[in-house]
Image 1 (tube, helix red, strand yellow):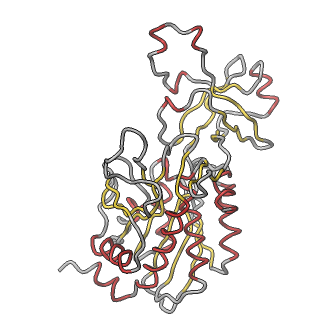
Image 2: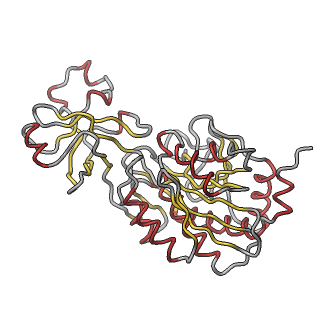
Length: 354
């Protein structure tokens, strides 16, 4: 889990993914692969098997939800804008890192104590545009002296921890450092396996602000089949019992529907068949809101059979999230078994519609 800890604790909001990319580059080079990058910053490693085709893309995304400094007030407070989707209620009194060119500053998203709030104010949600970050400065001049500027990225703070059940992982940025982790882990396992295809594994950029890196990466990767490795929403907390939705510890998620894509049915069924044959537990996810990089992958050029495989996560798009280590393990196992099966003949079946 040291690699996952390093990935989650790295700072990488959309457009500022350098720290995470450096870890991915280091780990990909260990696998003796051909490195591929795109013009936005996506990074991948290409591993050839016993056949050139199909070219299979395994892609997480480097970025996490965060913020950007948009204003420094005369009193030395920072105004900010969200990078990615946030619900304002999860922000007040949370600690954040402001990343400048020379150092990292700790700040807190300020909140007024209940003692001074009117009854009406207590029942009102504070919009993000009215929030501010306190870095302990006393003026805008002091902020300037410290080197904090408009445009600097702001990253949530949450340390990595494995909970007492020895399976639940608590950390920030599990959306989507688990995708980065899975792409590396699958490459490691494939070093000891024969596979009749070429695998390109890595991560895109700027997924949280509109799947932007997923639009550019396919032009350098040229996939025949694509898997987006990402999290889904776990709905196993109080109020959702018996919902039949995704739960921690019940296996990886295979997404049947989201707002960006309906997957290739033949590919979806193949993955399910393999999971059942190998007795790998899995869950089915359907979600009408949100999407993943597969929403762009499957529309590349004449169309790329695509699927989302990942794990259920609690509390995503906040400072903290939770996943199951066993789900991560089973996701890696499933992906390896699928890759060992995908050959040119199966690829042809997936794209035959007449």
